[in-house]
Length: 560
Image (cartoon, rainbow, N blue to C red):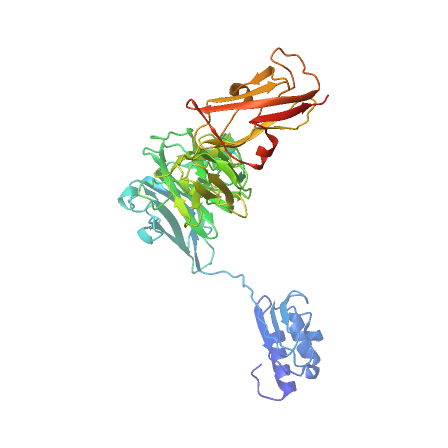
């Protein structure tokens, strides 16, 4: 392509050179730059290109670059050809040439690792007789860090090396590699390597073997549950691990590695023996997708023991932790009763706050799960603290994940507001708004008039009243009389059920029977209440209900 004469002359000269001077079997590489006018090519030039195997030269258009790499005497289509799609596209061609060199080498697989190198034995044979080739053998030592050093060179008069340990120290070079360098300057035929063999004391070999034992509790886990996995490690070699086997673990999440505590297992670890390793990992902070990596006998650790292979000592496991999204349930009682806003409560109430969560794995056992605040009248709200004001009872049973907070204050007269915040261990709150309840405290013992409801009644009626103070009266007797003053039924406190300071609707429902169990006739009846605390009559607290009583007598009506 560098010819500077007239176009027909360079084509003629190049064609004559290829057709008449290049021997068959020789390789020819030709290429053209862009903007070549192919319509000027002479027929003899096409013949020359076809003689090296080109089939596409006749299809080349003006200005298009092309590369042809072929062998003289080959049929059209055998050449390697690259043609550009347009004049501005760069093209390249990669190929190889098969030929006979006068020298070459053979390299072995990596041998080892070994505790001790024993002997080397190799044999080589020549194709010709008399022999015209030579062979030398190099022993390459490979350190643990990959550094390679030539440890020895042997000629054909040293075919059996019985003391290889004199040349290679296994503690420095646990692996070897052999390289045979061969040369034949006359016939260019490679000598035939018949044998090369290295004898050594092998190192142990173990592998993670799922077929010998594998257990996974679940690959999708609720937040707070533990990932539990058990797997088998087998000594598949012929030599024991004489020291304890080191196992490392780490978690990979969002390209961040979290190292877990390592373990030492089984000393010594004999051939064919199996170790079952069990691992339990908390998942409170491991939301979404995670990968657990287990590495047995990892190189680079102080306890690493020389081993044949390491690729089969690694186990990776993908698992997903589903976030706890369910809110906990909050409940507040005053003396075992759920009150309404504005209710009167005891001056010495037993306030019990309960938080229940459905997640049985994340127990409510932290005081930070609950915050309690109290405000009186127009005073500033204050936070109540554990140990000082509050008693915390943590959840201890995963069957019912429930914690409780007790508050047993002594309160002065006034109106109060209690506010409670609660969350579970996943920071799910108990509600969009804090729990708030207002209540009133009256230290002076009193009772309102006791009303029956419904009134009139046909089947049963209950009794409604409100107590103040800090103690429930020991006596609450309700006497039911005829209009003539005859007592037909006395209902005592013990029958009424649970009574507390504040608003009461009795559990007991009177069915309109007398003390003997007989049904009373329809009509109007009177009733009178006797309430005593510490032997003293409890003061009557005035309410609008007083208008329905005459000289402390009330009326009830039975209509069946």
